[in-house]
Length: 85
Image (cartoon, rainbow, N blue to C red; front, side):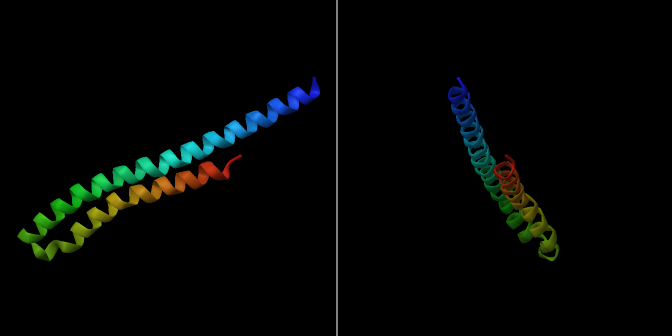
């Protein structure tokens, strides 16, 4: 009876570990997808705004950088998910 309980505990621990890696992969992948879409939209708008008002170019770069930060947040969440046991 005890060996079966130990095998069950090991299988449960491996399943939890597998779910952590799947969650970490989803966090990075979906955050990267969202950041890519956001950078594409913000970059296109920034270029068109830069043509009209070149003196405001710092603000346009800030908006693009905010969209890129989403991918970094996803990476941090994946590290948190992998680090917890």
